[in-house]
Length: 244
Image (cartoon, rainbow, N blue to C red; front, top):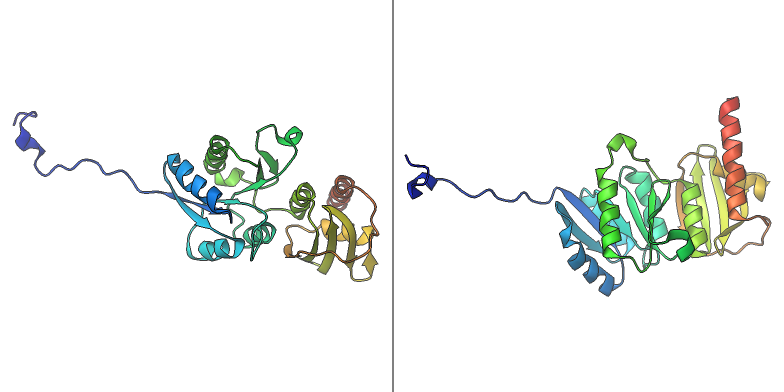
């Protein structure tokens, strides 16, 4: 039969485009930003886009759906972004997290920054930059992706946001408390330890379970910049591992 004969097309159907193969979850409480992402991110081939209005709704979606990338704001009602990040790193450490937050332009210059497994994008985020960041984290080989989010990364993020909080940290040795005011660690407690000694003990734990309370009502006992606290803790951890 002549290949140009119309009868040769009988039984033939045009190839149907494949459906979305990945799920992008956006946790954002501002309606305008939700709509912007719904419309602006349609150009992401192979993704379905789900939107949650707060961290609790996002957590429920992740319980029901397989999510491949999470984009979250930090300041949300019901459950904020910090609590959502803590939950994700405990239950879904393989899911890359993109955080939209405020930071000085000198820090980002429109380039996503990294805090361990966190990718940080500055507000107001450009859709082109967000789309590129989403593509970048999904193109990583699974074995090459940093798994989980560390307490150090969360504290650095809290410093950017100048957040007040009490962190309950569950680690291999028990339960510790870290108090944060204006993004700085001002006190810590673990068993009989108080202050900087307690902070160092807690900060060497690997990927502990973390709970947040959005208040800090203790007096300052630690008068040291967060960067120095984290650097010292990292040095102590490295020394302990080498000696062990």
